[in-house]
Length: 318
Image 1 (spheres, rainbow, N blue to C red):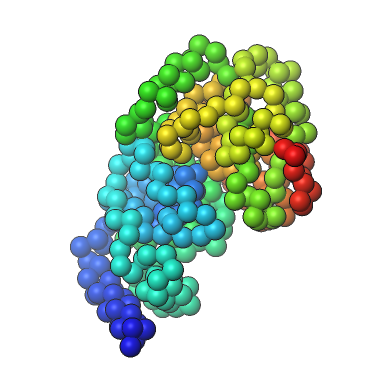
Image 2: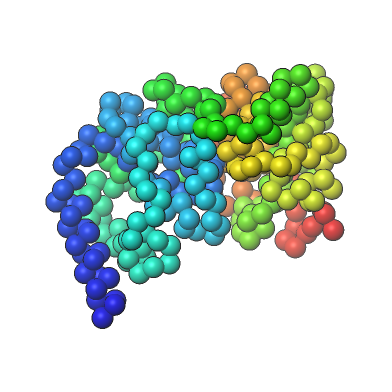
């Protein structure tokens, strides 16, 4: 009986959306997913299309807690314009029947996607179709594209968004950064260890990337940011920065560097991007050890360096 009732709710919800979308006909909406880096890529894609179509921007936060890791809704730590829909609604709570049934229905029904004007991108990197879509489109995907980020800036997205409530921790480190001009190094571990296709960069990559910056006149101290401080400290020599109140604060502080060695992570991608177009950045190539090729992610002015990966089961922190 409970399942039948839930199915009835889903059917009613589909009807209401299809029948009463008219008040939002000029809006562009985007489903925000993943960690902070992917949340920002989703925002940028929506902002780019909304700006080009002179439409309102709606941010659907109901699916940020779905997936391998619950990253939370870190993007709301930044002061970004748009209409933010509630994070949790009865049909979108992770693991519950309405959420699973609704997601499955959308995936399997091209007709329903067209009726609700949902565009689900199957491209991880730059999707050329995005800026051809009409106002009223609901975007779904990862949209990892420097071109969409640049277009969003053309329509008002700040390169470095301000924090809504900057902490003293962040303000103090920003002042230190202005004086010390650090080389920012990001070591990504965490949930990447659960997905071998992503790949964990080894210490050799970081040593070569730092050496490349040094050979080009970058003399500031190394500041290390990581989701695994112990592992990072064994891989890179420098000051491990800890104590961030949340992901938005950490990214904002990282964005004040003089140069960057980023991981294969959209988190450090955005930190480097926020710093400015003239800031030297070294990024790994390929982006994933075994995953898809992400075309259009790395801006042409960034420096690519051959990636070296830890072997499966390898642990340089041991």
